[in-house]
Amino acid sequence: MAVYDYQAIGTDGKRTSGVITADSPRAARRELRLRQLSPLDVSESRKGRSASAVSGHDQKLSGADLVVATRQLALLVKSGTPVEEAIGSVAAEAEKPATRKVFMGVRSSITDGFSVPEALNSAPKAFPPFYRAVISAGQSSGRLDEVMDRLANHLEKARKIRNKIMSALIYPIVLSVIALVVVTLLMIFVVPAIVEQFDTLGEELPWLTEVVIAVSGFLRQWGLVLLLVLIAAGWALRRLFRRPAMAEARDRVILSLPVIGKLARGVAAAAFARTFATLSASGAPVPECLAAARNSMSNAVFRKAVTNVRRRVEEGASLARAMRAETVFPPMLLHMVASGERGGDLAGMMERAANYLEDEFDNASTVALGLLEPLMIVFLASIVALIVLAIMLPILQINTLAIG
Image 1: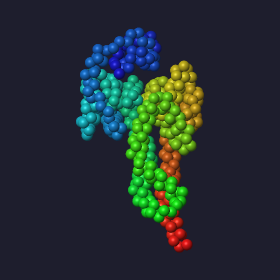
Image 2: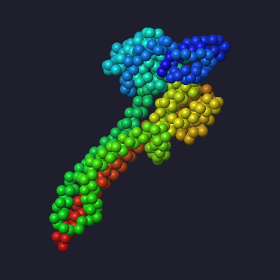
Image 3: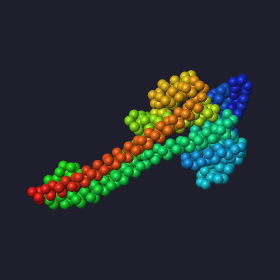
């Protein structure tokens, strides 16, 4: 982002000037209008051009490092420590060199006269757009200490949800990989050795044994090629899903699935509500809250829906009516938003909705995982049992002939 000097007229008719950060002059004017200012002149700041000198501290931070640093900042700022000193303390206590370098660079920017949001904008890789938007809204409203605390809570809860998703997926993935390796080893090494014994007998084999032998032969001859094809297909799909249209089609299919779709919808709706609540409570206007909420979601269908909602809100529609026009939001969230707009507590109702959706996801994922584990075990055990049965059938057939 660049830094721009601006001159504008406020709602009281007085002329005002200052500095704003944005991607372009057009974006800067749009941001000024969101702040209820009528821009007269917007030009790139000389101070902003010199800010590129501190861009060397822009390094990506892990989610855990950002959560810990934000919590430390929130505690220090809430205790009355000046922001510059608090950032310096976080940098001094950081264990990882990257974290230390990022926060020292931010502190250096503040020392050079930049505001906290402008200093954070100099490290866009370290601080995501939502993070910077919350800090900017907090400083504008004069409640930076409260906003920092809310931001730390938001990051901790978002990380908790991500960890819950990962823990729900790790066991099935590991179990599937182990079972796949075991079955592959059986088909490549064990089945051919036993088949050699059957060939010497010259007897006709059962159809199940013939199928297993055919699959074993295919894997021995083409297994490496099949592995390379699967790796290439996975790489191609990953590149393909980077396209917005394909990503939206993939996510729409995911949302339509019976159990997985409900879980994915709950996670996306919870992320939307939590992000909106955090920014709204910080004093940000609704369009800015929607923009940040859109960036916080990984589901392309929800991102497109939030984009449409923001457009309708900017055209004058209420948030509840704009969201109801989309079909992706859960009914409970729509009712909470409508209630919040009527009662004048939109941020509070959004936060309650986020808590409810997160609890619902936690319960649903626990039940789904509890059902998935035995189903996978039965399915994989059935495959192994078929291979064993295919091997045992000729042996039983030979024994029957010998007895007869």
